[in-house]
Length: 177
Image (cartoon, rainbow, N blue to C red; front, side, top):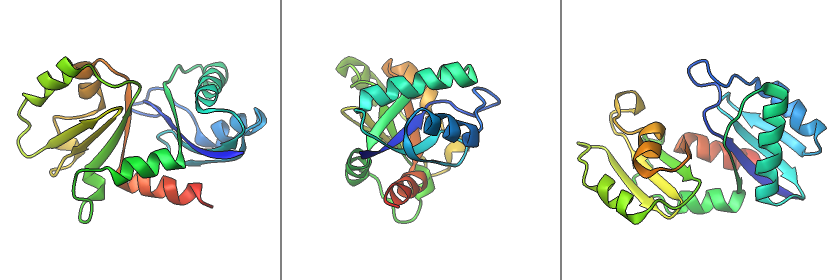
């Protein structure tokens, strides 16, 4: 059995896709996943399974649809995937890990869309796309940012979910328990 980190897109945001993590944990455990734990209410799950990533994504999506009547995108990553994403972060992390985000994309964006996005000025905000990963830094905080998940999804024609570095660090820590 392998440890996976499962990220749900758009759960418990603005009163939509409301899922109690305790109920989700029970649902996943009852479906055969082991050592299931969740972190905060935004759809962060750590679990063990003999299934491969794609099968986990499909199973978790189906279970959430059946038990919670929510259709959410599911990203299943290995601990190594997360650690590699963290290692490739191009932004300073020492002082403001809550202002640096790692966003996981369902596919590599088309080069022409990436080029168009690179032409947009964001003031002191920065981003970098590397394959199916998008990193962005919002020095004034997410609340004042022009960049967010929906913005990138619309511009790049992808589905995405992001977490700040504080959350990424915690998920790695929890996955090793």
